Length: 149
Image (cartoon, rainbow, N blue to C red; front, top):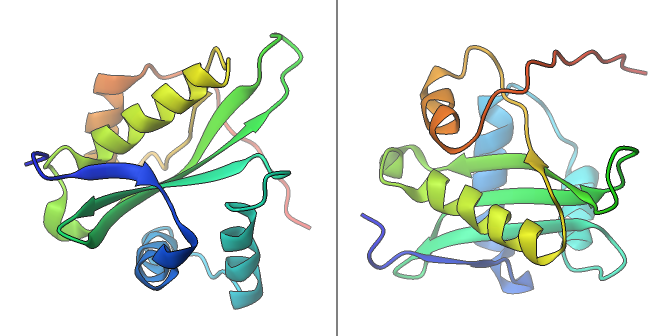
C-alpha cells in the first residue's frame, strides 16, 4: 500500500516524528545512543557541509519510516560511494513496500550525486529485512570487522 505514500527528504520540522523512529531503530539493534549524539546526528542532516542525509516515508501526515545515508570517498572509484546507514519502518507497515521505496529513494539520490555504488550492512539474524535486501541488491561477500575504543 504505497498509493498515498510520500518519500521525501527530512525537514527540520520532522524532528518530533523522526525521534520515535530513530529510537525504534536503535532499540531494534540493541544500542544506546546518547541524546547528545542524537541531536548532533539530526543537525548534520541539515548542514550543507555534512555528507549525511535523511529521507522519510510519510502517509497522511504521519512518518512511517526513515533512511539515513552518507557519501564518502573510495580508493577504487572516482565518484563518491553511498553508504545506507540506517533503515527503519514502524512494525505496523512492514511488508507494504515502504522499506523498498526508501531504498529506491537512496538509489535515485546516489545516482544523481554521481555515486556508482550504494551499500549497507545488516545483522545476519535480520531475516525479515534480508528477504527484501536480497531482492534489491546483492550480497558483497565481505565480512565486517571492527574495534571499539
